[in-house]
Image 1 (cartoon, one colour):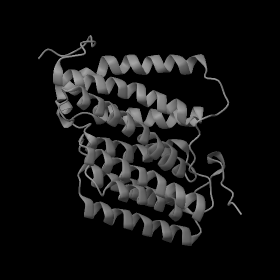
Image 2 (tube, one colour; image 1 turned 180 degrees about the vertical axis):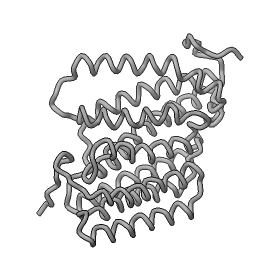
Image 3 (cartoon, one colour; image 1 turned 60 degrees about the vertical axis):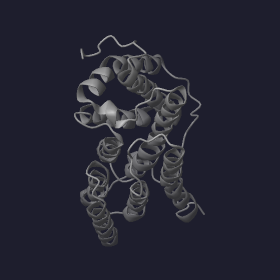
Length: 281
């Protein structure tokens, strides 16, 4: 028998639930932001212990199982360095570990918990509105105008390997898009979805953004990057809430990442020269 899952709008969770949720999500700052693995693991354990106590008190229901899935995903990710590499071994390592970080929580939720909280809604059966189409254009233009300034003035493009040969550029393209796709599967369809069972959308969105932005920091979006990645993470969560479409938020992300890819190649090689606001250097 499948356990009924309350819609986010029906959830009424005691405010104390925020304590373990903040602890579990803030562990990402230690795990990924500062690469302090033991303290990060300790914070995960403390958060889960507090969740168990809160569930046991009757103030929350099944908070521990859901936070445990988020903690498991973070723990799996933390087993590798997120520094960008393009070797066969590094790309295979990323694929296996990041894939497991999505697959393990999904399998536990579906077959052990017998719930369908974690879903990947590729098709919603609804046509995109004019606003949605215009937003895709806006995201592309915004990235085209802003990202060259960020990557070049901050020097963070150096956090990605220098790519000059066609095979290196192709690997970078695959890597950027693969990680961008994974971001939506884990941070939005897994972390955000689990948190929305217990918290209002705005709280769940802020919590998932902590994990999302911490991951992006270790991946390479450093310096003043959080000024861009925090709004991006929040907007992606809110967009998913509105559209209920993984396909749409994924296209938004991949359009943005297409610009990221072009900027990194440009910063290393001086081409493609398609950016109007490149800082003088």
